[in-house]
Length: 176
Image (cartoon, rainbow, N blue to C red; front, side, top):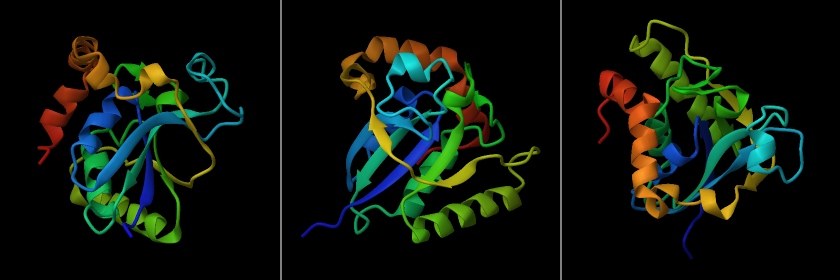
């Protein structure tokens, strides 16, 4: 029987968070959704106001025998600005905050260790402000948000190129 685990990361617009994880062997699915707020079953229209407390996030179902949580953390740190707690790139507000939502104590330890290693690396001259939080209920986003980069490649590429995310990644990291 194949092992399955879930990793949940918020890192700005969830459209941009799917593709980097989707391409890894051992990743079964990457679902866009909402987490960390007070409204049950929130909609995109509610979340984008910033009033629900939710963040746009991705829930990654993966086989830890094929791809490790540590590998997923490495990808996460490479695709966000860990020094910006008020949003990511052009997307501003709490619904776009970067945050790691752990589902067990091993994930919590791994996330804390990876954050500490990034802080010690000296890669950034500002503090690493990403919160590491126990995962509350994850709510799946509307169907039109799922796999957006595949369903709407031109819109996705235009958004990505204008968001500032790619320039940041090129300045600070090289994705493998």
